[in-house]
Image 1 (cartoon, rainbow, N blue to C red):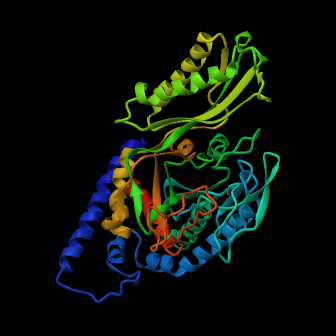
Image 2: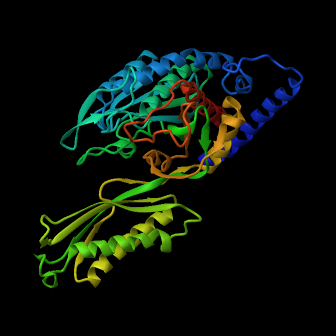
Length: 463
C-alpha cells in the first residue's frame, strides 16, 4: 500500500515543481534588489507552493527561539536513558501546543501526536535526545560543565554530536505545524528518541526499544523522516541519497583461549597472544579479499585487545573487541560469517580455541533511504531551500539507529550542514570529539525541510 501511495506522491510533487518552474519563468524579466543576508530570497518564492507565506514567515520569526532551545540543551546535556530534564522540557512544549503527549517511551522518550483537521495518513518526524561522555573544549557562553555516570564511572558530558540541534529543530517544526493545524490532511507524530548513541551496559534503549514498545503504531506511521546536522558540511545545505545512507554496525568479542606458561618456556604454551595477532592480521582480508568494495564500503576494526598481566607470563586467555560496518544488508551477513570463520579456524590451526560473539551488544541495521520516498522529496527540498543547496550524499560508515524505524516503514534521513563559514572542511572538528562545534544560525533550514517533507507527503498521499 505504501509503495502505491509513494508513486502517487511522485506525480503530485512533479506537478508542484512544474508550477514553481513556470512561476520562475514568468518573473524572469524582473531583477529584484535583495540583500545577500535576507531570508526572503528566491528560495522563499519557490517554497510558497509547499509551505505558504504564513509558514515561511513563522519559520523565520521563531528561528531565534529554536537557537535558544538548542543552546539550552547544549548547556545541560544528559546521557543515554538519563534524559530526564531534557524530556520534561520537550513534553512541556508539546503540551503547550495542545498535542497528545506520551512520556516515558523507551525509558525517557517523548511522543507528541498532532492531528490535523482532516483525515489522512500519518507521518513520523524523529529527533534524538542523548549526549555523549565527552568533555567540551569549546569556549562558549553556553558550554556545558555537566558530569554524569556512564557504566559506573563519573564522566564529563556534552552534546558532541549535534542532538541538541535536532531536538530544537523538531520543537520548531512542532510549533509551526501546530499553528497551522487546519492545513494538515492527516496526523504527525513527533518522536523524541533517547539513547541513539546506545544504552548503558545491561539496558535496552534507543529506536529499537521504541519500535518494540509500539511507537510506530496507534496511529500507524506510514513514513518517517529525520535529519542529522554535520559539523563538516557546508552551512545551510542538505545532503540526500537513495539506498544505504549510514552503515550497519555489529560490535563483536573474540575470546582466544590457549595454555598458560612461563614466558621463558613458550614451547610449553599455546600462546593466545600470538594466536590473536594472527587472527587480527587475517581479519584484514575480510574486506580486502572477500568483499566487493566498489559496490559497497565496509569496515572491520579491532578496537581493543587485552590479555596477560606480566612480561614473563604467557597468559591463558586474550580478549579482543571490534566493530563491523556495512552498507549492504547481504554483505553484512557475509562479513559476520567470515569474521567468525577466520577467528575460529585460525585459533584451531594454532592449537587454541576462539569464542566469537556477534553482535556483542550494538547491532544497528543499515539505514536505508526508501528510493521512491527519496525521489519524491528531492524536488520538495529544492523548492524550499534552492536546488543549489541540495547535494548528493556519499554513504558513510558511521551508523544510526534510525535504521530500526526505516526498517519498519519507508524512511528518509537527511544530512544538514552546520559548518561555520569561516572554517574549512579540513579544519572543522569532527563529531564525538571535545572540539565539536556547529554554527546554529541556520537551524531554520532544518525546520523548513522537515516541515515541507511532512506536508508534501501528507498532501501527496491525500491525492
